[in-house]
Image (cartoon, rainbow, N blue to C red; front, side, top):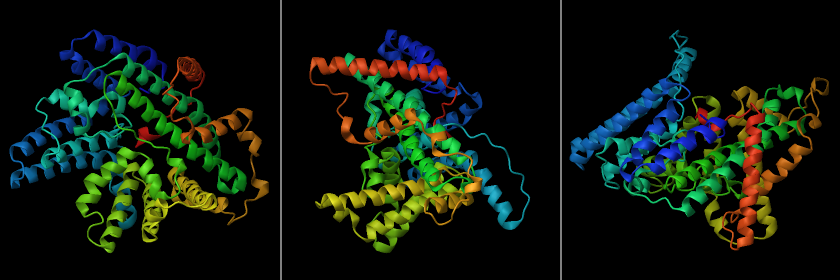
Length: 471
């Protein structure tokens, strides 16, 4: 069930809200847990088994860890619980990829199973792992009520595509929370902002992307190649940040406060800065549970570079079982390492002229746009041909051109591009913080208009994917 669907907006969510607000405080968590299970099972109930196993492993594993904290038994219980969760995600997400590569390398003939990938497994598995590790470290108390833990892992607003929430950030909110008008109102506003990002910007640009990336790079001009890549840069951001906005908004509606997942990543001047602003919950997770345990930057330059390589290899794999994602992760890692070598952090902390800042931003945008092709392409061969086209390193055959730019971009798309550029900056960051009654009225009217247009778009269009659902 998509947040941007009539079923969710006009049936599922109103029913959940009705039961939630008429229920006593003692029953509210159970209402949300039941709603989350129904929400997750909506598309295919077969997904539910992996989620329930994750909850089971994490609950009993953390109980054993807590009873034997800091001992040999506790440490091994933590390792085994984490390993069990990793085995689940490996089987569903990577086992097929692993067998395919074994067959290709060793010319074997292992039967490659058609394994169904549970939606959101990359997100809820990481939440479960962080909980068990935090219990072992003493960063959060063990949760002895399995329903409360199940709610943390399966809470429907952030179950499918994050943000990745750490248990100690919302433990108190699970036990006790208030829902007042201001929180509810802000949650609704935030949900509408996310919905409009998704329906009005991401889907419009996504239609361009799908038209371009289905073609052989030799049959498109350099301009169309850049158009497709830039369109995907914006589609990916507004699709994912739109989902995060909706998730955060839904959290506020039910009294939960989730941490922000994006901080205007496209105003960055380096790849290092991008990863401080993009998918913050994922970057923080890898830093706290992989990078620092590996030694971080505390064990010398060579070890730091190795740790960074490991992190970005895993980041690529996290996004999908594909060599394209692995190369995309290492592509980002290579620039992170280069920027660390040239001490880009110290450079960023100093004031520079407008020209220097602009050159840095151009470097970042070029890097981002080229890298995003690797992320979007179905395979590495296609990505290489596409990037060569973008860089004018081979000349497409004009006789092979199928369409000109006007086929992809009309007046509507131009307006959406302008909106995408403006909304990628902090220009409207205080939009939901009006200071006068007149500005509050303007904001509410504008949001109401956005909601009606977004809903009309949902009703009129069949094209409505969420990119990060497949991760």
